[in-house]
Length: 156
Image (cartoon, rainbow, N blue to C red):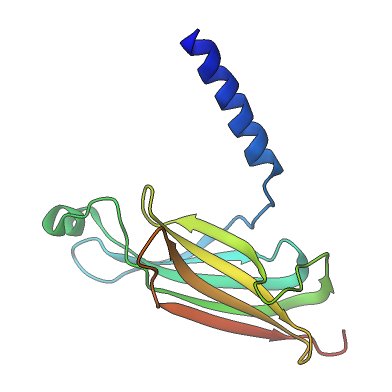
């Protein structure tokens, strides 16, 4: 009985995951060692899933195992991140969200439960510009650390 209930919950969760809007998948393109503790700056690239011709690069700090052992807080990385987005081909706007909240185009866990790195796209229609903002998302005590990049839409 319990196993059947768990299987039903797993199927429901799988269906929910499939129905969620897709976000970009990042590829690691750089890894900079910053100290002897194994801490790194990781650089990932991802293409905007709804805007053809735009690629973003996100850099973030990743703690090494020695740092985690020395300082505790084993499962969490800092909220610091940086983003740069550029036109890498002809731009074609897909069916993008045009609200002032924008939409998530990339998300990656920075701790097991509480924190993730998110990138949202906001369309500034008046200035014909795509705005990408990288920020940490937490259950509580949200972080004020963020980074922003813009891509102008010339002749679109």
